[in-house]
Every structure is written in C-alpha cells, then in structure tokens.
Length: 312
Image (cartoon, rainbow, N blue to C red; front, side, top):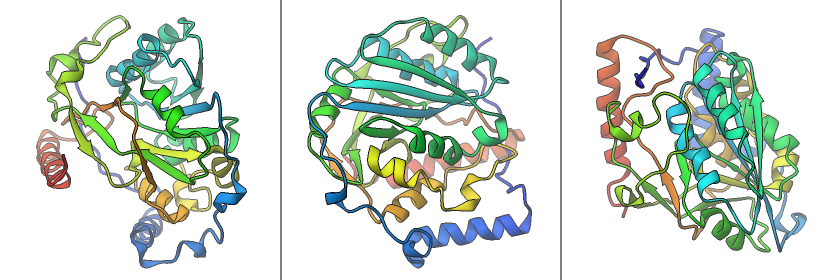
C-alpha cells in the first residue's frame, strides 16, 4: 500500500484545563519570561565536563510513529555510508502497534555494520507520543561521549558523522548543533521520494542535489547534540513534570525549546557537512478532517517560508 498520511487531531492535553494551563506556562517560561533556575538551579560548568578525544562514541536518538517511510532513509544512511572514525549507537523509540516501523527495524537490524550498534526501544504509545519521555530515558542511560537527539526525517550523508566526531574533539560544550542543515522542498505525500519506501523494506538513498543548505542559529529539535556528562546528569527536561507525562496522541514537541532554556544556551554551532532533512507537508502521525488537514498544510508552508527568510 502506498504511503498515505493520516489526518490531524489537535494536541489536547489529557489532564484538561490544568494541564493546558501548565503547558501554556511552560511555553511562556521557555521564551525567557521565567528564570530557568526556578526549575534547574545549576547546569554543569565546562570545567566539570570531560574533554574526550580520539575515537568518540555517539548515540543518536530518534522517535518513529507511522513514519517508517522517512525512517528508512535515516537508517539506510548508516548502512550505506557507515562511520569510519566514531562508534555509533542508533536508538529508535517506537511502538509495537506500528507494523511498518517494526518491519523496517527487523530488516535494518539484520544488517551488521562495523561501528554501528542498533538499539530498538519499544514504548507503549502514550509514552512514545511524548517525545521527551524517550529522550529522557536515553539521556539518563547513555554511555556515549555525546548524544544526538534527532528526528526520523534527518539523514546522515557520507562522512557526516566522522566530521562530527572530528569537530567534537576535546570539546566541553553543554549543547552543540550543525550550523548548516540541507533541506528538501516541502514535499507532497505523492512525491516519489516519499513513495519510494512503499512495500517491502529495503535500503534507500537520497539524491543530495535535491537539498538546499540552510543556516541554523540554534539547536532545534532534530539538531540537539548534548555532552554525555550533561545528559546523564540532567536527562531531557526531566525536571519539567508536564513533559514527562504520557499523551493520548502525538504531542507537539514544545519541549525542544524548553531543553535549550534549561541549559541556558541556544547551543554552539559546529561545521558538520552532510546533514540532510526531508521536509513534508502532511504529518502522517495525526488524524482529523480534510478541511483541517488542508489548513494545517497551508499554515505549515507559511511557517517554514517565514522561518527561512534570510537564511542561505
């Protein structure tokens, strides 16, 4: 069956007005209106972090709910363009009720890739739908030197992770991010790239010439790379109760901004070539009516156009 995105359901907090008010306050707080020390008194200072050198270990953390058509490109990139100079643990949080993703993980997991360890983590849907829950678990449990919190629409080009390992040599930053992210156009669901993973799982690759470089000025949700010492000590928004509660449907990732707010930094930009992101109009993990889905797509186009004015 060809990929057909589900429709949208509004993100309604399961606890009613109380949770809605808490979410509103946290979003306001993360804008800088409230001191982060109210929730997290201290962040490790650089001299408290280990400056690791040599062959580094990196854990990449991704979530997937009915996005296997995108995750296929991410995981394939590690098979087709495996890192040579870093050890990578690829962690994917998913749910047993998502057969497309389960089948893909079974297929990819059968590939032995030197330097890459597959780490499939099944969650119940309520915990999967609040992305900060899985990210917090991974952060607290990681043994890696650095941990990259990303999304399943991000693809690692040839040499990307080795270049990242080189850029991280001896660094003690709390949070870093690739300065340049190469993005596709905003693809419709019928685009050949999104349809190419239809059917039996297989290895797929992108045409890099179809992506346009965009400058980034902060560690956005798919580009948050954290020092392992910081991750183990602080987790991922662990002190914010709301972001550790399960959700009835896929929750918008407001915690991305809260994470930067808690760490008191937008992140430090690094030169890491080969980071690609597949952008798409339809959000396949939501449900709703045709009219609301069309309106949402229109708003999404406008939002992306507005954010990228002035970027190159």
